[in-house]
Amino acid sequence: MSSEYAPGGGYGNEGYGEPYAAPKNGAGVAGLVLGIVALLLLFTVIGAPVSLLLAVIGLIASIIGFRRVGRRRATNRGVALTGLVLNVLALLVSAVITAFLVAGLAYVLNNGGGEAWDCLLEANGDQAATQQCVDRLNEQNGVQSLPAVP
Image (cartoon, rainbow, N blue to C red; front, side, top):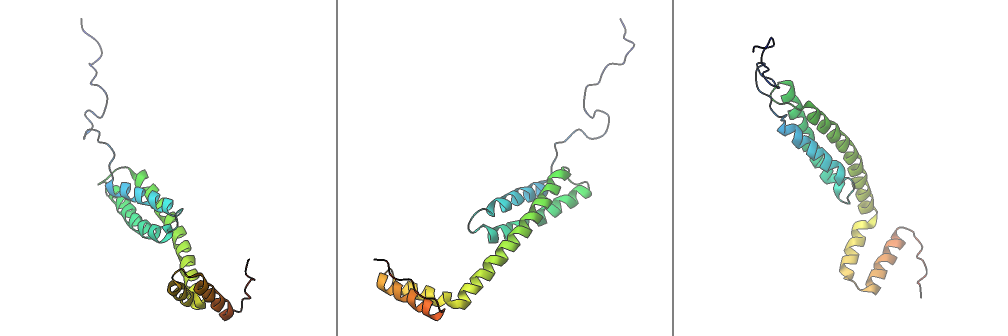
């Protein structure tokens, strides 16, 4: 019994060049992971400066992954593109937050914060010495002290 149809060869890329390979883009994946971590670190206390560093590294990795896709050395363009977008977003937000932190620290240090810190360290937990530090800082900045609570 003969069939008028040719036997089926199965599914896939049979006869069309290379066999199917899973998408790969190590640099793009690294950029994506660093972008996610950089964004999550923005919600922590010390996260902005660390996030800034991770976003720069992740941005570089994402660009490398994106360029590899363009040269057909890697697949999974979407991963590299998503990493690129997340790292740019993390870079911008962390740069703004870091700038505010640096400006605030500079303001505090220029307005007696360094001397106050030194005074509090010298007080070493002694309440009377700590109160003298606070009173001296208030006097230097023209702030009236609140009456002591009994």
